[in-house]
Image 1 (tube, rainbow, N blue to C red):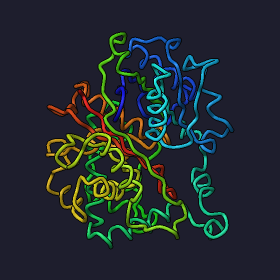
Image 2: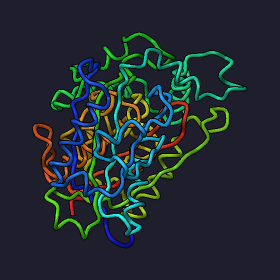
Image 3: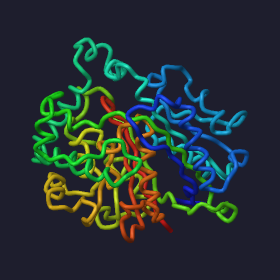
Image 4: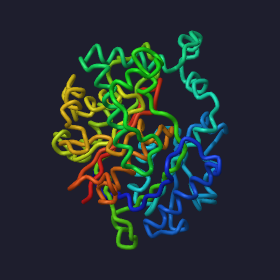
Length: 384
């Protein structure tokens, strides 16, 4: 990245849970913001700009960013809404800081998934209204088609996808923030109820409530802040058509293109050897394998084999989703990828507790906005 470097200097979050009846989403954001400001050693008055990632349909209200200034301390300050995933929102804040006109910025993401009574109805609104939505199938049918196409094209197997689900749920047992840690076997995942063949219920990340707030600053500001900086070495994003009939279902082209952009900025020429850990989107178990190959962290058709060989385990050469991923932590809408970024930040700082990886210096977080989209982002973070 050219010019002055941008660093994450503060991080705050709430634990992820299936339901949070005792707190509104505003209260969740407030809790995360207080932790982030304390971590960075900054007051809200010192923040120049704010970004909120939220989808109005999930919020049940239009212009959802109008509901976050109070709890962020952002009243009468610029709040930039991004109706997209958290890393795409992070990119927008990085670009604002890179102008040199702003010193400190804050991004928030939250989920009150427990408030959504019929999430499939909202997902269906993203389907093409002329050709696809009238078919009235459950939106997870799209994931089932993608999974079948990916497995057939690459040679990865349904059992290997189930192994990704089982491993991530097990990893989550060491993460106090995770909602769905469990000791599952591949056989138990495969025996779970069918959702959209070959997709099983155990292959799907369950919903969770929570909030994440990150504080970013230009490098010249680091002397005035107390948070341990983690630098954004590279960031990229890409969007393909959401029309399922117009794209290759077996590929995650958005992840390929976003990774190439982020790698160019970060000077990464061989991701598999230069990345120490990765948090990749595993909203569905097969997506972890697909994304690993798209990111160049596994050769084409080999992600499942490397997973079986233990390469992506916490003790392996390239730990993947040591936090538990979305399958173990819970799917939290746009906030999900900010939680992934948070995990990489904690690992690079050496603050990940029982799941801490030794010697982690460069980490990657990757996002996908979910079905039926083909959009996502990648960020490469470095300790120095």
